[in-house]
Image 1: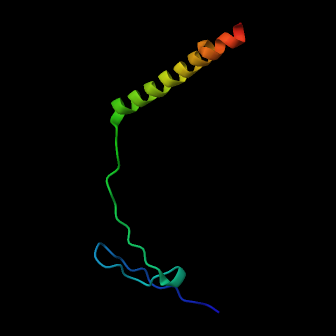
Image 2 (image 1 turned 90 degrees about the vertical axis):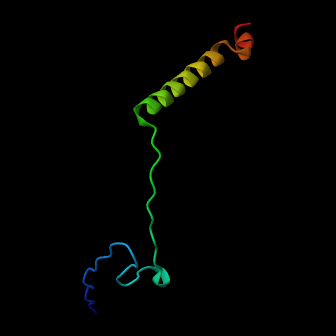
Length: 72
């Protein structure tokens, strides 16, 4: 049992071409959107914010209200 492959068909915009494939001949339309971008400055600020929150949580664990119970 051999099936011949359908020749490739090009589709640039407009209606899709070719034979639908998948479960119950489902056809999917894909649209593109612009991605969010922070740039180098925004990325640097996010990294600094994460580092500051990490240091703050470590300091709070060491010297916060529970530290009085640990150190008497």
